[in-house]
Amino acid sequence: MKRIIALLLPVLVLVGLVAGGFGIMKLFEPPVEKAEEEPRGLSVFAEAAEQTDLQLSVNAQGEVRPKRQIVVAPQISGRISFVSPDFVDGGFIRNGQVLVRLESADYELAVVRARSAVASAEQALAREQAEADIARQDLEELEIEDASPLARREPQLAEAQANLESAKAQLADARLALDRTAVTAPFSGRVREQVVDIGQYVSPGQSLGTIFATDVVEVSLPLSDEDLGRVGLPLAFAETADNPGPEVTFRANVGGKPREWQGRVKRTSAALNPQTRLINVIAELEDPYGEGSDDGAPMAPGLFVSAAIEGQSLENVVRIPRAALRGVNQVFIGDGPAGKLDIRTVDLVFSNSDGAYVREGVEPDELAIVSPIQAAFDGMNIQVVERMPDGSLEPRTPRPGADDEDADDDTAALAAGELEGASQ
Image 1 (tube, helix red, strand yellow):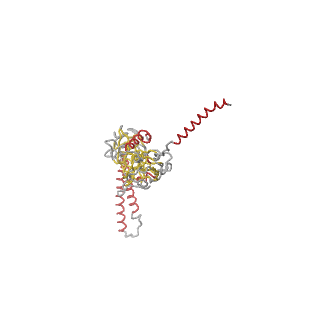
Image 2: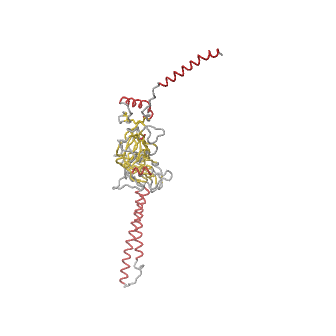
Image 3: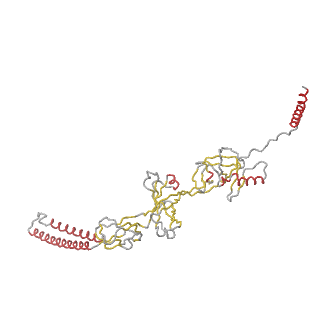
């Protein structure tokens, strides 16, 4: 027993000394200081909203087509004796120019026969008039007052007069057929297709080729109802002197170079497309091969062009960065001095790569946040850093007890690391 006590006694003394030392350390331990600075909020980039005027525009695409295009066809039959050198694919033609001429010998003979028939009818009418005069004198000498029209030769005279009119009509018809041996262009333009040549026999209505006018070309541009509202056009629109259509800028690559042409909306189509529910707006360009060309490059039919239609002008709207728009119509606004997040619903007018334009919900010079924020809520603590127009960064949320050097260090760290992905 004494041996056991001798072994445990040193251990008990050691435990007592350790416990006493720990108690003395706790007794003299200084109190824990509580941090007075609140946790820092999420650091975010923001850009200032600005008040501006907005010129709306609508983009569309379409194919250029001539306003007037016809199939050239003869009104009579015959063998082709002449084809104009200009009547070839791509040829330029003038109004009234002879494109194709048919053999005219048969029609010239018909004119001669018709003239002979007119001469015979005139002779028959003259003879009948003389006989009618003789019959009238005989009746007067016989003092017959109730003679029949036949005795006075009135029906015979009318028949001779009608025969003369018929002969003259046949002569006019023969001359008209002779004139139609020359097929002429009804307008100035270009030849799109030519399908006949000298020696070929053609029938009335047979296609000789296709020509189109070069005074005006048009483009059919499909627009939605929303686009139509931005342009400011009603469903039923036709340009007048008092109500001109909006201007249109056409663009396309021609000859390896970007080209532009200036036209105007002239009318809307009669009905919506039942498949797409879009309505076509018809824009025209005058003199595409002359004054309307771009440095000699015409807006030729068949060319596929993009079109920017001038829309309505809006004054005193507020522009914010496109990246600041959340969803359809929400914007995150940063209160820099307070370091709080404000989620707002705005009246969005228009948005494109240049920015989002709103009427209500954001005031000029307010800071629109462009950084992504997960699980955002109203009143959320944030650290706002404004990105200036020149690309520099300015902190807008002060830190309690922090000097200017600390703020600069925070801004540099923010730009270098934390918001690197947001700034791209």
